[in-house]
Amino acid sequence: MSRKKPLTPLTPAKKKAPPTKKVLKPKSRNQADYIKAMNNSDVTFCSGPAGSGKTALSVGLACQYLLEERIDKIVITRPVVESGRGLGFLPGTLTEKILPYLIPIIEEMKLYLTPDTFNMAKSKNIIELCPLEYMRGRNFHKTFMILDEAQNATYEQIKMFLTRIGIDSKAVINGDVTQTDLPENCIGGLDDCMYRLSDINGVSLCRLTPTDIVRNKIIADIIARL
Image (cartoon, rainbow, N blue to C red):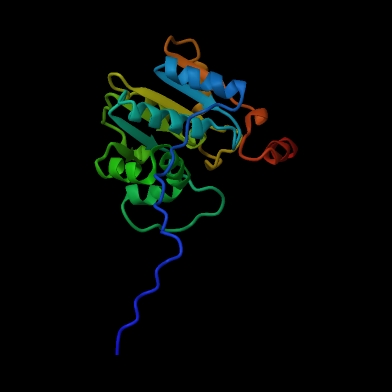
């Protein structure tokens, strides 16, 4: 008996197109001013409501700097503070414990760099996801440093973060002072640091508003009502 020949597909399989990278582009005047401030300043503070772009734009610019080889490293950090009810004990090292909190940033970076480039950079420690508690005693040269959710950082923690800035580095501190998750007996330091450093050359202060929210316009209405 002769074997039947396998059926030939009617159309050849299409090759997957290479993933396209997200391009950094402001969607409001305040966002454009924010990007300009980060480009021109060593330290940039940005406060604003959820969805206004304060984290996405800083991550996008950091990725752009990395692709253009203007920096050697990106460091992302944030305070390990839970929002709402606690999740209980999380297994692993402190670095592993912080990963669930940084998933939105990781997803954003993969859009700007592509997943393969992100994974390669992370494996070589070119991109470092560092718990804020691990930064003391270190110095970061030619690095784009981002402190996210800074409304949950104390004055001492923000001061410690700022003193890690090395040569040819930038630091961006983002937060929404209206959404702190700190316990009642703990005071956030974002407002105080912005006030004290407002007139220093090389430090910029940016404020985004509900009009800059691009995630979903209904968020602006919700924030205004709540």
